[in-house]
Amino acid sequence: MTKHLDIDTQAMRAKILDLAIQGKLTNQRAEDGNAQDLLKEIQAEKEKLIKEKKIKKEKPLPEITEAEKPFEIPKNWMWARWGTLSISIKYGYNTSAQKDGKIKMVRISDIQNNQVSWDSVPFCNIPKEEITQYLLRKNDILFARTGGTVGKSYLVSEVPENVVYAGYLIRTRYSENLSPQYLKYFMESDLYWSQLKKGTTTTAQPNCNAKTLGKMVLPLPPLAEQKRIADKVSALFAQLDAIDKAYEEYRELQQTMKTKLLDLAMQGKLTDQRKEDGNARDLLKEIQAEKEKLIKEKQIKKEKPLPEITEEEKTFDIPENWMWVRLGEMILNHIGGGTPDKSNEAYWNGDIPWMSVKDVHQDSMYADRTIDSITPAGLENSSSNLIEANRLIVVMRMAVGRAVINKLPVAINQDLRALFFRDNVTQEYILRIFKILKFETSGMTVKGIKLWVLLNTPIPLPPLAEQKRIVAKLDELLPLL
Image (cartoon, rainbow, N blue to C red; front, top):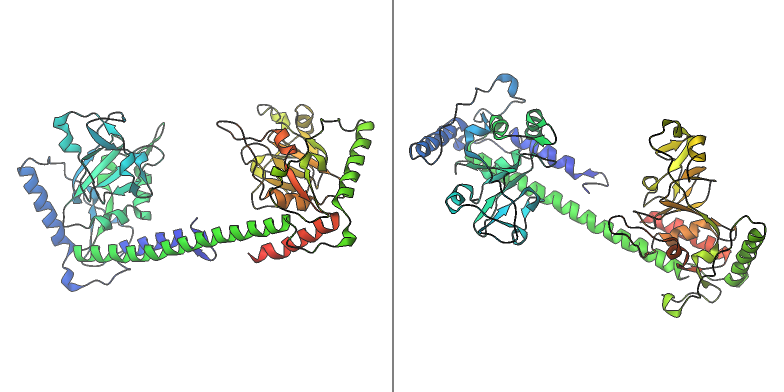
């Protein structure tokens, strides 16, 4: 998360980089010299390497037009093309990753958050005579040229052992007359990404080649100012990192405190117990009597009795006038749902809100809208059910255990289940419990909770009056966090 309170740290990073490459983050100094002289030194170095046959001579890049210069830069800076500054731009070695081999090979997937976990980098087999040309050196910059991460870059800060790089990466190498960190910061700027977007081709997946990278224009300061800019950006980013870290710690503390409050509430330690509240056992008898009535009237089906709650399942002590009950004992009925045929347009975009997992949000208590809707024909020709307003709806698959109270009638899909309670159970109380319950899930790819697991879940049940006091107290305290 990078946006919190009134500080959008991601936007601040982008602004800092914009100011940096425009020369507005640091002071220009006469003693720094001139970027034109710096470029001459780089070109002389490249000519020397060409004569020594260490690099190949490349076609001259086109002159930079005025239209390619997006903003003004200081007088002792200059606009340059990426390919003019680089000593070499080279594609990686194409081969498959292996558990064992002659040498390690860095792939795009090994680069996460501008870091490489070198211990987990795989090996590859590469002819011995080709290793040298693909070796990574400190201060090389790797560039992802294809796929969903196209444009992602990594400044090689260390090379703990001999390592080559994979074919979906491009290695760029530079003169020591350039600051690698300044170049890396350019590759995080909006100017870099806008040029990349223009030069990226999209076939089966996005692709950007070395030619596109080489033609990119960037503002070039003298070396001393490149270093000052890199140091200034690093210092400012460190402060933003500290803000992000502090906020994450605050969020963790906030969540811990919320959970602690809910724990205290479920143990009867957040409110006073009162004799006039009566006993939860009487409340349960009323629920059981109501269920028997509905069974006789054939409005609901009789279900197998749930097992007695064991002492091991009672994870904490509760007040004397409370009792441990299984969720299935507290509800009068439960109904699942379904999905109308997606290919039949007559079933969709109707007047009936249709709720799925994506409509049940972790931090929400209530749901008053849905993303999708269906028609009466869609409802009739599917296993979906229309649930009246103000029912507790629980997620059974994917975001297991999430729950909301619907504020309008909705049809539900097969991943949800609606629970029906008697009026001597406060649904908001049960909803609060769901926020801290841990369910036993099953499934390899998609996690789900079986109905019998849900119904067997032990719940601490207070008398109705205290349920309401607990909800009122939580409504008072939780917003303060």
